[in-house]
Each structure stands twice: as C-alpha cells, then as structure tokens.
Image 1 (cartoon, rainbow, N blue to C red):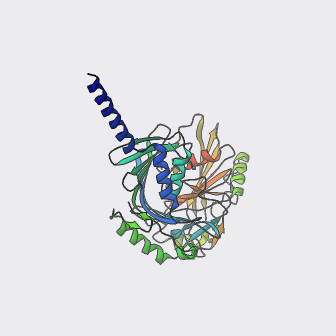
Image 2 (image 1 turned 45 degrees about the horizontal axis):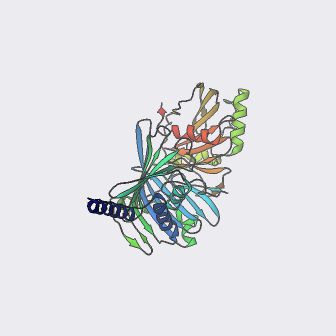
Image 3 (image 1 turned 135 degrees about the horizontal axis):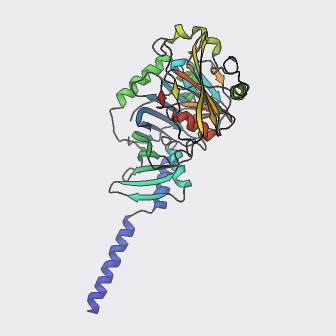
Length: 410
C-alpha cells in the first residue's frame, strides 16, 4: 500500500512540474512581448479599427510607421471614403495633415507619450508593463490580457483586452471597453512587420502633402486590405492588414475663451469674429468653388452630442447665415455648460501651408483634433466642429466630442 502511495505522489509531482514548465506566468509573457515589440529598431502596422457608438459602427483603415527613437506616422481613412488624415512626428515636431482640405497643422507636443493607442504596439507593451494589476488568461492559441488604458479616453474607456498569438508573440487584436465593460473599439491587426527602420527624411511633411501620393496610398491600402499574410523581416515577424489615413482641423485657445465669454454676455449670435472656427478663414471665399468632390456645396446636417449627463440640457440653437454658408450654434446649460459650433469645413487656399496650432493633438479615434484647457476642435464628414467651455475639463471635452461621431443628426 505504501508503495502505491509513493508512486502516486511521484506521479502527481511529475504532472505538476510538467504543467509548471509548460505554462508562462503573466510576468513572463509581459517580459517576452515587451522585449519583442520594443526592441526592434522600428515597425510597420496595418490594421482595421472599428468604433462602435450608439448602436452604430464605423470602420477605419490604419497604417502605422515607427522608427526609433521618436519618429511616427499614423494614417487613418474611413472605409469607402476619400477623406483621410495623418499624424506625423519627425525632427521638427508633431503635424496633422488633412489632404482633402489641403491643411497641415503643427503642434509643439510630446505625442504619443502618455497617450498610448492600441495600434502603436510599443505603447501597447508599455500599457501591459505599467498595469501591475492586469489579468491574463490562456486559450489554446492565445494569451488574453485585460489591462488599463493610458490615453485621452481613459475615463470613458478605462480598460482593454489584448489578444496575443502564442506562436508569434504578436498582438492579433485589441478590444477597448467602456465603464460598463462593453466593447467600444476593436482593432484587428492584419500585418505587423518588425525590424523596419526608415530614414528621417521618410517622415518629411513634404512627402505626405501631395495629392497624387495620397491617392496612390489609398489604392495600395485597398489592395493590401485583402491580405492576411504572416512574414518575418530582420528581427521581426508579421502577423496581420489594411491601410490608412485620417481627418482634422484646429482652432485656438482664444476662440474657446472668447466664445464662452460671448455666450455669457448674450452676444453669440452677432460676434462672428470670436466664434470663427477655421485657421484658414481668409480662404473662405474660395471654399465653395474649391470644394469639388471632397466637400459638398450643400448645407450640412446638424450633429448633436449623445450624453447621459444629469442636469445638462440644450437651451438654445441658432443658425447664422454667413458669407461662407450656415453656422450652427448649440448652447448647453446646467451643471456643465458648453457651446458647440458647427460649419462646413473650408478647403485651404494655399496648398498645405503649415499652421501652428496651440494645445495638444487629441486622438478621437475617428479623427485627430486639437484640445486646450477650454476647447476642442476637429473636422469630420466635411464639417468643422468647435466646443468651448469654462466648465468642462479635457476628459469631458473629449467625451462630448466622441459622443458626436454617430450621435443624433438633424
């Protein structure tokens, strides 16, 4: 009997040792993935990002270049749309380029530090390493992490699920969750190529402000979207595709303060200068004839935020007829007061003349905006948006802006 008992204990011990040797701890996986994702001298990523809001969803092709130490190019384009946008970091600073509007904005910013996004895999590795309370579970083919987010949306979208292929140790998808643990953003990686180091000159703004180059890239993205190959290059691997571009425009901090004070004095309807939302207002007279296929000449439909805020309501809605078209002004009052201004986006008269924009780039997922302490501005679907408030903090400004993506339209 003692012999059988001894043999049984030996067998159980052996099984436990085999199990222990065959599985990786959370710390082991984080260390291995971090080393692989961040040790490479650079990488390229092609992904599809789906944003879900208010029962609707939109898909965007995302194309990323990164070269150490601090060179980035992120191009985002909505599927089936001509409009696109890029955010580029090079030796001169951070730039947001909107080809359809011939606009380029420059920021003095440390983006993307402290503002990680799921498609930036080096930042994703930092997210996993920074969250000591993250959770990991295993399936037959993947490690699945649930960790905190660290970006503009962290208050609204506090957590993310990161799926990592066990064989390649590369991410296959990232699901960003809201406070109710509901999926809001899904990033599916189509292709990841590690070990790609581009020259500093490859990130020059001039190379991305040519319409012909943009159209060529759009065609490339569509042809690449069908492939889901997995390849190795240099010290890296590829696992996952789709391509690129994005949309945006900027406003100034003065507009935020001026608009809010104008509202308080009851003169919002007559103060045209203080509520101007385009850095290229001097090109407004040419906006209609320059619009072409990118910007429709008809008046736009008004967008409304979808917010679950108590004691905040729409108290006033104005339509001003300007020389350049209709300008819509929505005033919200209550515990948190703010003003939303909307008008047709204006195409710049001078081709890609860089304009300095105060504040920081605000990645809204569907576009890149500009945010200050009192305002946020962006462009989407041919419309310029500007929100000003003395009551909202930056997180709340982003929350209002994000709620207008697929919000109520009239």
